[in-house]
Length: 450
Image (cartoon, rainbow, N blue to C red; front, side):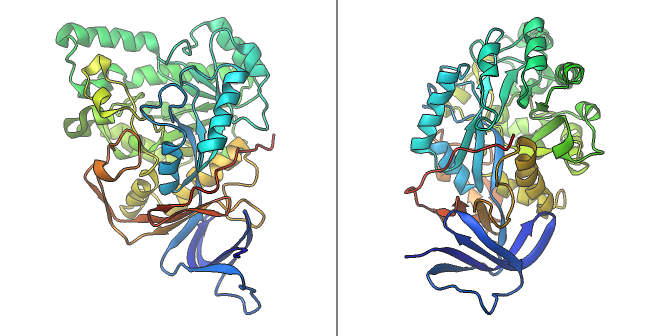
């Protein structure tokens, strides 16, 4: 029986370095990682040897913002299908949002999601607890060692999760010591803009006006107010899915991400698409916050490079094709991304926009550091063996017909990517191998060193 895996001749990309070397997995952990050829004294008996010549080996990605829809919205996605798609895309751990049905706004409802994930999820997992105007007592009972953080919607949200009472917000920012992740858009400003366009177009607002309705001013106002409040109370604040050039000035880049009290996230769709893509993609790139101008897209790209933005994510949020065919006000915002995020980012690397080293830093190392995840996010001896083997020269045509998402579509439909995720290890388990899944071992609950 195999003790584990020995990966040789891989191009290892980790901690800002790139070298050809070897990595040994014993049970669920990394036993050794080093530069060069197989050591003469290396004992490989009873290990499965993988020759990774010409392949890239990186840490498994950690996505700090996904919506996997279970419970209550499982016609769109669930905690079996979406983690499986994530693993096929090189994402080995995820943090899922609370706007399910019912919303995860109490300790028992939060616990229910962990039970479901333990039974179903191929990837490692954690879940945010959601906020309301009246659930501070539930937030304060959250265990910081086993829960990733608290989520506040400062823009339109599902159910009663829009926190719009200033006293409630002040109390949350002052008393909650966990990382607080926020969706920042100013709801009153958006409503005014939506009413203006409704008067002109009725219910048939063209999708490209989504960027004008949910514009940069709405994002900046909400983000700046959140930062002002966090600064006042010394809150550990994390602002999700930055989509505008204007917001970049709110953040700092002069210290490492792990030392910042206020951090920011960029999502793949805001880095890939721009306002010009509404003409072809329409509702399939309708997200909140909206995809905006090419100037905004390019500014967010540069902010990631310059360390104003700290981490990468997907905001994976599937809806059915039928739902996406609705008119503007009835068409939900969001789309599926976890299966294709990594290969899309690699495509941008090959175009000279980013380096793969930066992608690994922002989508694995920095996430682990910021959230203080125990023994993940790096290829290091003693760390969990979460890793991805990529063939950088194996093109794949992405189509709706070959996605793993339950919603059965992708905003990248028709895109020819030039690289492929070949293998994904989760806790030392080869969960995905060239299109074949091994579901005999599920992911684990993330632990936090806080």
